[in-house]
Length: 315
Image (tube, rainbow, N blue to C red; front, side, top):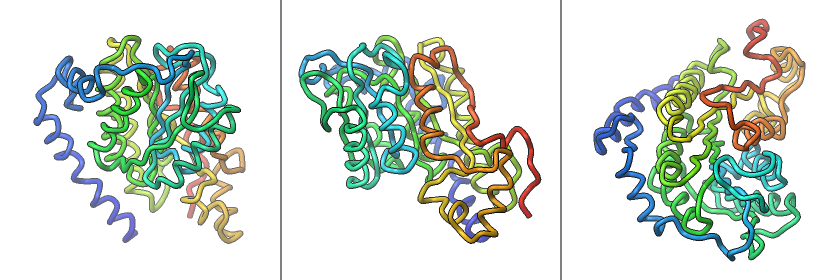
């Protein structure tokens, strides 16, 4: 509980933080993204929209924040292999996808980009034929770094079709930073685009001792819905995926711990198994691509029925 209280204490300053950012750039939206000014400023910083690297046939351009983690890395591979369906989330072409992996740890992001390139059957960094995967170091807790990543992507590839925020550790602060920067980028291009945030099953399920995470992840879902409502008329789609316990480095204490802990955790899931990163990645890719073109403001549970079927709470 001490850890939970500490995390909750870190989450509480979010409201004044968001209000201060909105006040710094007056706008109808609490994201602080004006209808024209912020988008124009983004375009100027990105070089006016850039051009496609190499000039070859290029497919959709995807950015995965937190791409060095288990879910983010799986998503990058899925997108590079064409797992979101043909075409992009906005106005991308029909060529090979471009996947940009942005992560706090450059080595992990680079490794994830390499695996994504292998999944696509191509090489890291992209090429004259369009497509490819590349890595950028980014601390998504810093809004300026998030802005800079998207500016670099637009400058190099000409647009951004869909963005995913898979950074799990820092919860609402990171989701807000990615949302704010993505909206600015997408408002500046024809065809709009898509943003998908990652929540968690605890946002809608009462699980003992998860108070801080429940509060933060519920905030992520509210952020997704409100942003979708604000910007849907301008061609933006914003959705959320809410995984249950997933086999990642952060959850090993539950998924690979003692038999008692592992069995108790598994028993909470009606399907009696934990999710794999690829389970979550498939849902994220669906919402980022054209197959999810008419889905907006939705929270998609990928939890084996944990949140909706109400299993007995863990003791």
